[in-house]
Each structure stands twice: as C-alpha cells, then as structure tokens.
Length: 133
Image (tube, rainbow, N blue to C red; front, side, top):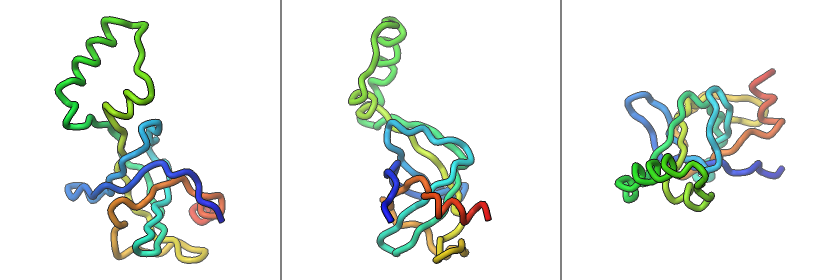
C-alpha cells in the first residue's frame, strides 16, 4: 500500500485548546473539516484527524520585512512572488482534533498524542471508508 503525498508535519500541541498543530507545505491551505492521517512511525500508529482551524505565519527571522514585502506588492500590482519567495517568507498551518487511531479495520480511542514531526497526509480510500461506514 503506497502512501499519499505528505502535506505537512506535526510541530506541537496547542495546550490552550488541546489541538495538534501541523505545519503545512507552503502550497497547501487547509480546509475546515478536512480529514487527514498522521503517520507516526515512532509509535507505529496512524491517527485520524480533523482540521478545526487554520492560519499562517511568518518566519520570525524575516518578520521585520513582511510589511515591506506587502507594501512593495501593493505599490507594484504587476509584481509577483515566486514559489521560493513564498516558501522562505511564510508558512501555512492547521490545528487538528484527533478522532482516533486506526487499528486494522476500525478507529479506536487514542491514549497518546502523535510524535513531533510525524508526517501528515490525506487518507487513502480504504482509510476514508472507516469514517463513512
């Protein structure tokens, strides 16, 4: 069974809301309610997760210049940022709720959170079918 494309990595937990935080590939903008799989190779577990919030951020080391980038783009409507610029300047992230762990052909309760830097991807059809039984 091949994996689907990696869209992000677990980077932490928002303790104030009990959400897992996922940093996304800069080309991905999460959608509310979207279902994802978190592949945790350290625990040999696959978590089902649902997107509950989204956002974006700026690399702290480049934070002072983001307003300058915005002004330059506003002043020059024909100018555009290439993909490398976008990747270096900022990033997208999502907050997800864990729905459970996939155990053979069912989703069961989880007792641990995913390991830091676990891969996040969209579910395969067989995994998605577990949710819509």
